[in-house]
Image (cartoon, rainbow, N blue to C red; front, side, top):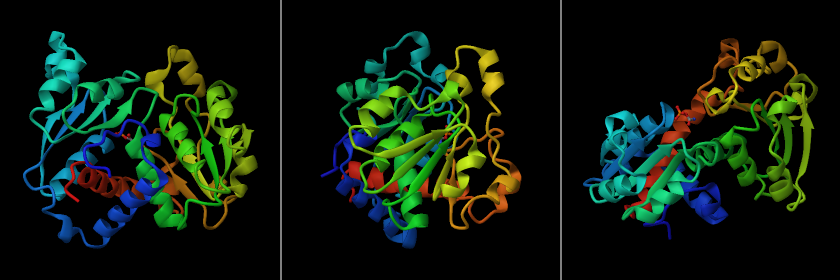
Length: 307
Ligand code: CP
């Protein structure tokens, strides 16, 4: 039963619930008209204390396409946070206006804190370097749609594996399905954190390797998940400048990949995927954003109890 629940991290959902949400999203994709009124009379509050294009606008589009309405802010400076109002008070207030809240906040743990003070479901739309569960659902729906399964995949994560919250969440999610293997491709400064290895990969006996050169491993992959070097999480601008162009996927490197590999990226991209790759049929990152809207439609419908 998903009605009334909060979604703070991917682990809040069982495998069966992920399946339920993805199946509903697939039904919406096939017949969106049948779902255009299911949230009529309901309000989504989109509270974005940190910049976003995809997550905020896809949440808003999702609620509007379900027949509901949307309120909120895209910048904390236009809210009473700028006058010193606490997050707890903001949530107490907004949850008395809205039926569901999607919130992004730069502080790790902010969504969990918000859930303690909310009268309606909180969806974590990203809390600092911590979790971004609806990106994980987006990635899972994309994998299921384009690879047909969550099992027996070799997944390469490339780029900023230290600060990339989407990498940590998708790794954790895909570890729950059998026979998946992971290849972590990064410079040594941006390696997958030790806690991911010690707490997730090793205890679950998951097969993984680490590499520094994408060319050396791209031919082994079923899924290549590219990431942006997260400028906003660096303490030192010089380190960011040194590392930002560590990996650039281009047509030459794509020649080394399997014919049915898919390329994912949570976006926004900076330089890490050259525009020439966009026309390659294996480039799936713009399809991925559309799956993101459908999976958020399914999630909103489930958490509000509309379906
Ligand atoms: N993928 C993602 O979270 O994009 P935005 O930062 O634009 O929301």
